[in-house]
Image 1 (spheres, protein in one colour):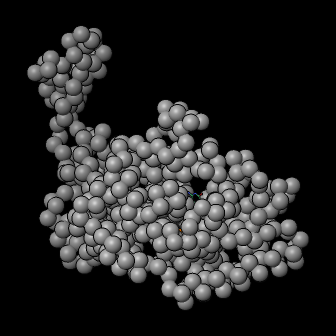
Image 2 (cartoon, helix red, strand yellow):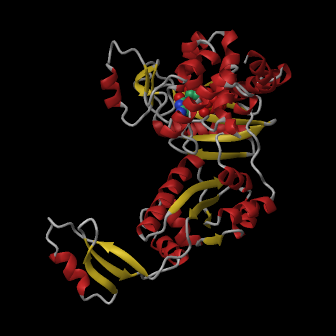
Length: 462
Ligand code: CTP
Ligand code: MG
């Protein structure tokens, strides 16, 4: 195992040169932020936080988090306005203003992705004034507790989670954040020990000082969160709140399998197939019915806003198709550069013109059920009693083609995400079927996503 970990580290650790470059860029950014802040009378104190500040960044994720700390007496409007102004002035021409829960500026400097985030300088991180005020406190905590020799262990854990698709607390992933990885290494001291522990986690894991609050109390405070890691800087927050059941279980399975048979595929999974010909034949072999709904989103929105809305839309569509009798084998969503896609895979594309409609059992009054259907034009057979003792009618199916149902469902757009609904009404949508989705997805740049969908497999079995 140690040899594998050494090899992996060699590939993922930033080189000295890269580290120097990052230091130079960040020092320069801080200096410029100070100058601009004093030029516009902003009282903002720039501070580097996140993985760049703690040397826990992976060489393939060159990213700098620069925070601008404002004193508490500054109003929210002024903090946001001046913070964004400083961010824009640092960036020059090339920047974008982002807004998820909190506004910030994103820019590129010499290959580094830089986020410039205004926040408040607060003493007690359990009393936030804005959602990002904890970050400087996380910075202090990790700097104080993460030993320099353990930084490499954080890199291994991050890369392992990335390899199995469970890294990142953003709403696209619902996985483990960088800060959570750092806390796990602070607690367990090494990658190996984290993996050993995780391989024994049950359906829930609570990592907290339970002298203050029992496990039962914590479960009540953080319901439906399989992993609970109380933030050492704010006991009211679960650092692992974003971790979904799926990613939690994937991590445990991966840990169990890594201990049994360590290999590099955990960190560097095989690439998905991308040849269009190959993908077409995979689709054909499955013999199912594929649809993609393509959307051209006319609003500049970050993935954290779009992904939950896309998933809500996906759920609403699949539920309605299921209700109409169409079995959904699997579905997924994708978003990049203002283009969004909902991928649906149905067992069949057509159903017969008759469907069974099951009524009440013998101990329930049958009158309303009988009255509704007995004279219906749709009645093909029934009422009769089935083997379970329930009344049954066989009725005509209004739509026998999944595509017609799908179009109706999209056009009624009930229960969709707000911006998805707006996109459909303002810009329309396009539907592609079966092999035709390959060309469309290739054009959109989502061919990797399709390759992964079609060969879906835990990476260490790949
Ligand atoms: N943060 C947090 N909770 C999140 C996301 C971010 O508390 N769900 C805070 C943390 O203090 C984190 C900082 O915001 O250190 C920067 O976030 P991010 O860039 O997402 O994470 P990094 O720790 O920098 O990790 P990396 O960039 O290497 O993925
Ligand atoms: Mg970061």
